Image 1: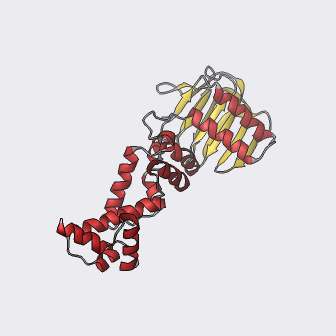
Image 2: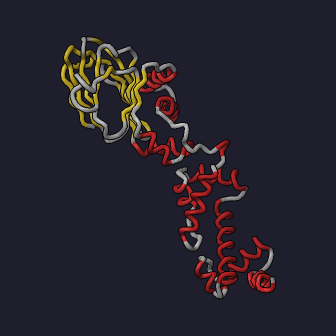
Image 3: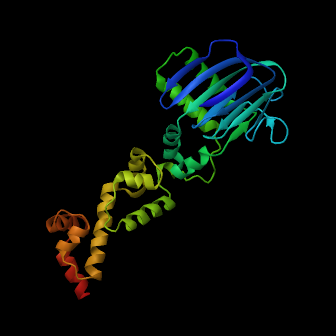
Length: 291
């Protein structure tokens, strides 16, 4: 993080705690009239103030925090990665605040399973500034307790931080949330399109999960709840459908079809085909020819 401040002095030792993909920092400081600051981080961060500083601090993202484009500092703000922040103190005052510095990948891991990767990426690009902090401030105070004097396992503080993040971020109502742990139709359509684009029906579960913006473990859970099958069972079924299409539309031998679709040999194709369709490829092909 790049930062420079003038006229701001800490009045108590700064406390911090390093967690999984994030750092919590508690500041207590005094700012003189006319004090200024510049802050730029390559990762997202959140600031929650424990006093109303709106009449004492002005901020801007386009240059010094005076004149056009400046606005009051609110009680809680989310600053996306790469967005600069200038501050200017209007009147002398003391303040305390919690800073959460978060790795972007950590944020994506938190949000993607619930709203999809594309929605998570869009959410992380939207700045947030709110004056009515309510529950967020209560959570921030709990977080400060765990930063200043840890009393529980790190997972407790990490979950508090996650609640602050999701409570503050502007998560769009249009985000693709799997209803009751199910994939949406749009997500299923993406999977089918991705499979068709592969040509041979061979994609990994990790690739399927990435296609719909979910973690691999969560994807496997909601996929089974949606289709009644594991991802691998579904993929085998789709590959057999491709085999049927190839048998109907052309004159490829079963050996050639097995090779194109990634089966180890004709016997492997025959075994899987019989399990899913109920008869051998040869028998099924003859019936299609006669009908």
